[in-house]
Image (cartoon, rainbow, N blue to C red; front, side, top):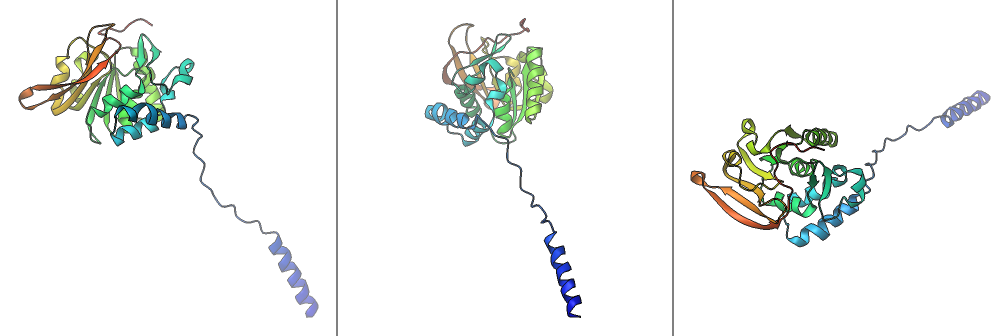
Length: 245
């Protein structure tokens, strides 16, 4: 019996030694973002010192990957504070201007916003990241298609249309705010008509090839507009027909 007990003990120990521990699942690491520090510096060095204070705007500027919205040849300049060409005579605005215009729309999460001038989609992505319902119009069909695909790939819910932005987006109106990222020589009346009472229209106005003025218009009671001068800017002209590549 003692011999049998020893044999059983050896078999039991042998069986225990062959048990393989079950691996413990560990969360996957987030993809490495090589530009994260550059975005932080962009906000800390270029935007906050120029008195942009809205925390929702600043958070969006820290999160949205601007390098995804610039052509490959300008990748190294993605977070520098100047506009960059994106083709078809258009540009992506400098980071400060994007933040400054976004702040002056005076938005609340869930507001419906119309953007005129999608470009590469960066401004639309900032607004979407802020929690807005975004509609964006681009007159250059190729840019509209590229921006729509890019925004979808990056997970931003934005409605994009290739059309003349002068007429706005009547079937989606009224809007809590409208932002125009090209400079007309006057305020397009259809855009005013598509604002909600109390809504904001931020638009640069001025002649082609010269310094323009950035305005914040507020639609008051009785369809009256009040205007606030936001300073001098320089934008591409507001075009009414698609330019050639």
